[in-house]
Image: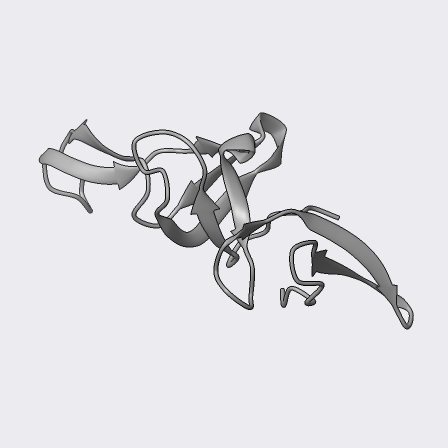
Length: 103
């Protein structure tokens, strides 16, 4: 089970977007990276295709998982993730507050 999943609210710990938060759009487990909405935005030159126009576009680049942390459901501050067996299911728990992380 992964600690960070698509749809999670995360806080950026390092880099140019330090302190900002966003939603995880995609996780790339093989590279230990994630794409976060509105974070690590870069400009890319786009060639014209049948569906897209040519020009310079802004898109989110992947960020390493070590540089992001789950936002605590209680106060929105960064927290580590633990696991707990709840009935017959394994659930993620915020270490900071002990609250179950919905996912």
